[in-house]
Length: 330
Ligand SMILES: [Mg+2]
Image 1 (cartoon, helix red, strand yellow):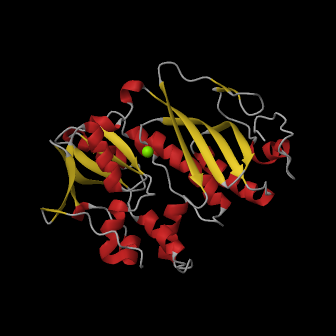
Image 2 (cartoon, rainbow, N blue to C red; image 1 turned 30 degrees about the vertical axis):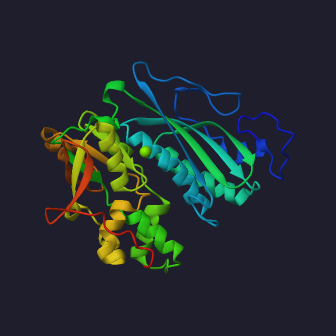
Image 3 (cartoon, rainbow, N blue to C red; image 1 turned 135 degrees about the horizontal axis):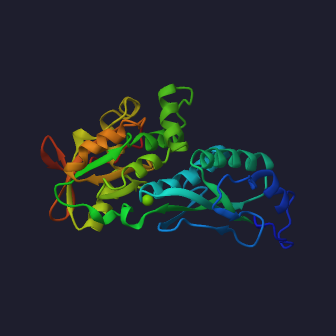
């Protein structure tokens, strides 16, 4: 089945393709740069003159990225959110997306929930769904996003220079704490736990922050695999080293209450945060603080880019090893 409206007699389903499109995925687009959306063989899109097209793709697979029984609303949100996070990390403004769904069977209640979560986030960011595909198979969702950024202002990973500050948005570690608590069957009625779980299920892509960091950040990456690993990638791309002050990590009260002495380890290695980690020349710090007043999440300096290579963790001013990742038991 294809969301473009063409026939696919080889894969019949109780809910046919035309019905899936009409009921769940065809929405009027407010964007005048969508010349032709869902309904033909391809969409026709009009990128703005003078800007580069930023493109990213991400797939979520049941059993690998989410467990059986995950709320389809959360999945619809998440598969778009992780892609918008990649655009945010480039300083790009999101515009269009494509969706490919692999479904064991077309279940109307599941599709309605997925579409609700997906479009609620898409609408908040002015993103139009312009095409896609559905196939019969194990549950998986792939989204490709397109956004715009003036090429010279795109925030690459490679621009960090010795002396730049290392910063992170939000409070990393919350999402993995929520994921682990859910996996351990913790009491979902606990409000502190619900807040952590929401950070895992409904990550908020830092699109506005990414746009505000154009022209300020020297390099940027989004934190998907863990702050330590993603920052290390940025430093490698920049041909630089870095020092990260463990005590400077912005740990949420909910994370500290849940994880205690392992909170820093979760913040460094947990992943699924979809926060922005970026480097900033010292003379831009004032402008960052000014722009960050509009954000409803913190932005925190956690270290400094150095000459050389490798990421060094500092605790009490002394180099230390990555905190042990043995956090499975809580
Ligand atoms: Mg990324």
